[in-house]
Image (cartoon, rainbow, N blue to C red; front, side, top):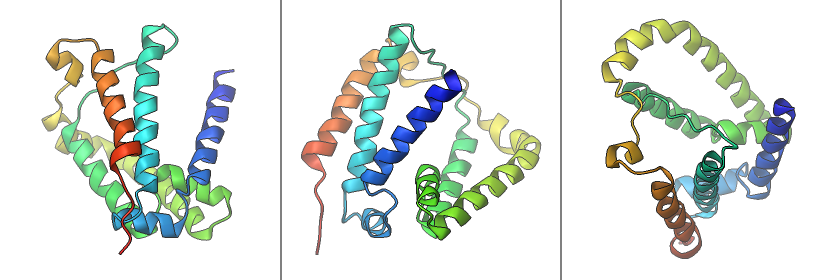
Length: 175
């Protein structure tokens, strides 16, 4: 049952990405040039709603929010790899799957490249763990734990700010 619910949520997420234009080359290029804010607005809205939603589900006992260790070296390395991959392919991990389901050949190659990259990473992980992950492991920290408050008190203003940013601040710039 859990897998079926996850699959359905993934399908809805993919449909929203598709309808939001997140697989459109023109939209992606406009986003990277900071001229078309449509995808950024979509992402800010999704993060705002998702953040508040997951904390409310956790408070209600429906979800189990678990903070993962902050491996700063791993996050930095992953961010660099993510950025290079997005710049080269024009897709992030979610949008390449949606694009591949549309039959876009470049997206299919991006999915295959991502899977090959994951395989290479799994073999390189033991060496990376010692060299990059462990030296910069800050443990299970969060802004809420550092401030000594419940996470919902961070999620509410953060979600409100992201949603306000989406609807009232970000504007498309065409020159």
